[in-house]
Image (cartoon, rainbow, N blue to C red; front, side):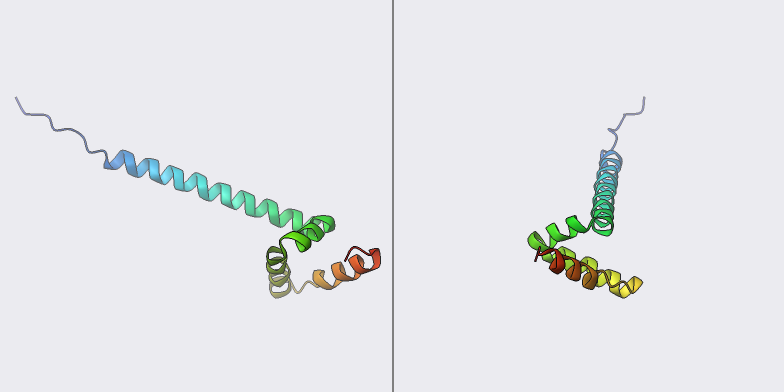
Length: 86
């Protein structure tokens, strides 16, 4: 009779690791899209980000200016100044 050798756990570990990486990456993409969507559609959320997380809003504005040629920064600033929010 041939002696049986135990199966290697490497394949199982690699599958588990790949699954975890996939789930974490998918969650990161979903959260990033959700943040971008709210920044893109809600001026009040942009004001909240301006007051609390200005570095995130700066990235959003600079990306919009470079990629799409948008002037959202100037429009937001004018509206917030007219409403007395900043």
